[in-house]
Length: 281
Image (cartoon, rainbow, N blue to C red; front, top):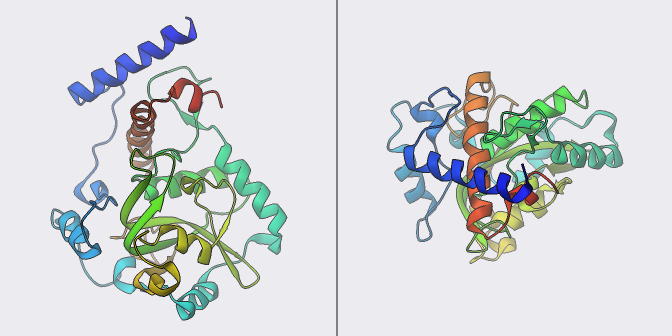
């Protein structure tokens, strides 16, 4: 099959699935807690977005979740985070940069629109709008499968966030929470979040400046954000920060199906050829 024909067929399948709300491959339905969205609407505050999303959750409980125990992301908070993050094995920044870059670029996820075992996708870095919890889980799984490192801790960030990105029609995405893997070398905390266009580690301070609402000065207003360093299994804002069991395989498969399709659809919306950007680059 020629590339244009193959691309057209994929587009037709994507449109069909969007219209029918179903796909050939069965996936495990996601519960209310797992349907939680990080997306913040344009004129919403953090509290408004949180109420809108968590208001539909039947099992949201205050007490031990990452959102409940998060602390200010000011200078003291960043120092506290450094004391809570486990150091990258060997403490070697060059090795960290290499391993993170390679893991971010790896193709290891089945393509939802093609059953061929030879067609694999990366984590959905080109769909930064939502799903940071699944990207974190998928990155950590691949890190372990590659025998590079045990699963990394997660950093949960809460507040009125807006990050510039070439992968959104408006040039930015808005969140009320965001989750990403985190590690440390010496006293420096490093965030691993290729969704912001970097396939290597970023200093926590720099990353916070990237995600604070663009309408504010990140230096002055950064403390409006709150952060929590949690265990590798803590991947939702509803998760227990220290003792969450992580994501079951069935949910991981369901999220992969969802967000890889959303990434494909987003490339189409941006006028790109996902056959090129997601499968060939």
